[in-house]
Image (cartoon, rainbow, N blue to C red; front, side, top):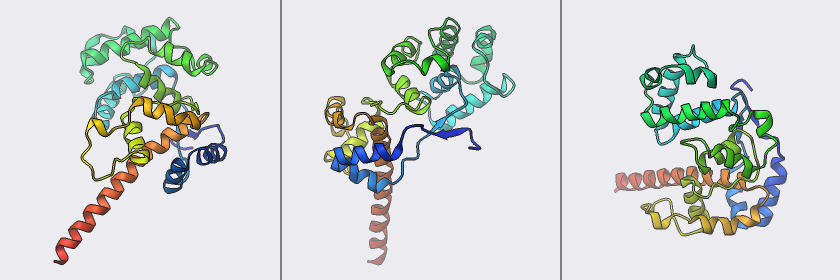
Length: 239
């Protein structure tokens, strides 16, 4: 593909068939959303992918993209090697817009890539999901959630369930609980990790696919809310 992304290697049809048969409500969501279109970033090394993840954490997408672009510009419009990132002065990294915490995190990522804590792509592909999470979580600024996103979106692992992810928790509540698109969202309306884990047992070994559809449930809710507001506005105009 032109943008460097590729489809996951596992069988979409088998995954969707299993999920729909195992869980009727999830099957209904799958029918509403349509085809599974997750694409993997196929060109980034673990170091490069995790570098970007750290930069994007807790920032608006546009702001993070701008910082990443400035950072890459200082290295000739390409990702630096871990060794080079460790050699450059901190002022170069801070000058791109990185906070002190993010600067420390990406330097730790570089150091742990050099010493082998963060494995090469060839080695990491042979590790279990649990091993990958344990190794990556040793890096400053990388926790379980970031490691899970790496497993899903870089490695294409089919059975990852990020139960602490806000979008997954909200999508679950929209699909299986009483949350409606027009409700004012409060923490008590979100599904708990335990609730998700219990129901998701029947989704194995395709929980990454199920999670992707729960994220899409949020997109459907936004579209439903916009349609509801448009209908209300039209009704008022007709009075």
